[in-house]
Amino acid sequence: MVSELSDLGTFSGSDHSALTWQLEVKSVHERIVKKSFDYRKADIYSIRRELRAVDWEKLFCGLSAELCWSLFKVCLETLQQKYIPLINRSHKSDKPIWMTHKAKP
Image (cartoon, rainbow, N blue to C red; front, side, top):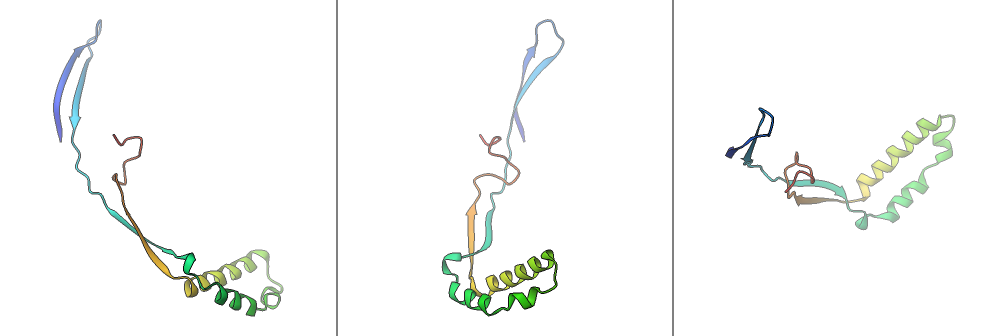
């Protein structure tokens, strides 16, 4: 909604006029909820036990470095899902998503 529209007049020696206005914007502030791993409560001993149980030489034998990394990454992600609990992290944004901190008054 535009309010308080005013004409500041023309510039000297010009036919251009300056306008000012007040813009009123209503926005919804959303609560952002994100799940993340709670590493403080991770079962590190179980993760280590399972990693030690894998015969890495046999698993990686004859594979490229890229494929070895992919297998190792899948293994770590599986253990992460299994032994690290998820927590909800939320915060209420003090500004709309589209607004940058520079634009905030």
